Length: 93
Image (tube, rainbow, N blue to C red):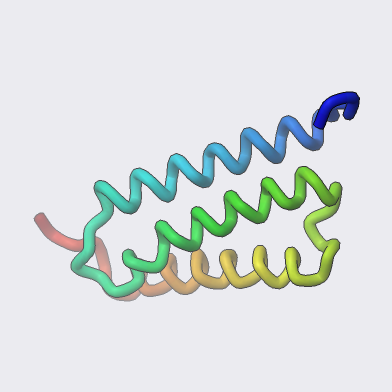
């Protein structure tokens, strides 16, 4: 917004959001689709990027409450996907 001071927090959140969007795109276009959990990762990283854009505006990852829930849901998907990956092993080919 014009006249707003750009803070380190805001710049960092925008950069972080960009990173999550890039990861989402890479996973969407190069990810392996043989595993059910691999379909959940691109949208989860995309939503996590959106949550960082919102955080840049609100100034906190826990306010409003639904932002915390959004971030927690994404982290849950990341953890469950990692767990499934570790249990099933790396896909071949």
